[in-house]
Image (cartoon, rainbow, N blue to C red; front, side, top):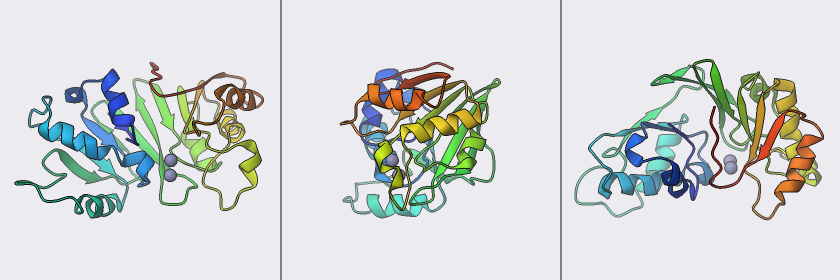
Length: 224
Ligand SMILES: [Zn+2]
Ligand SMILES: [Zn+2]
């Protein structure tokens, strides 16, 4: 299962996983940096070697399918088939319900962002990964992450930008605060500008969160 597919994520994903081993994609919100690589994935599934006629379940937030179809409707029609439905089983998830994908239970929490956005908690075998998606500091996200094994949290803003309004993102310090409140085992920070220094981000976060912490970059892999 894959959580979000922003630009570049699909090619990075293929470094770690064979396309044929992916059963589902879950999208947190309909900002392009979280879903746009569904499009190259579709081409790989439709025309690539790995395609074996098995559709990948594509779980979108409420309203997401209409937006994605508006986008894909702009492409010239191909000889046959629907742009998405040949390769994906397109579904909307209900963020108030637990979604089951194989052995994994997925729970959602709305976040504080500019469009409807859902943090996700993936749980199997008493291990869990919670992913903040995009969010300003939000107790609903911290609640979802409570005592999670790994909390993957965004750290978009510099501390100086904490006074921005309206707020839809967190600083590393604020991500670490959510992690501390939630009592997570391990914090992984992500979704920060490429121009920012990872060591500085880690220092900001370590001032607040004393547990295991890492600032991640493309290609970072972790086990649960
Ligand atoms: Zn966003
Ligand atoms: Zn984003």
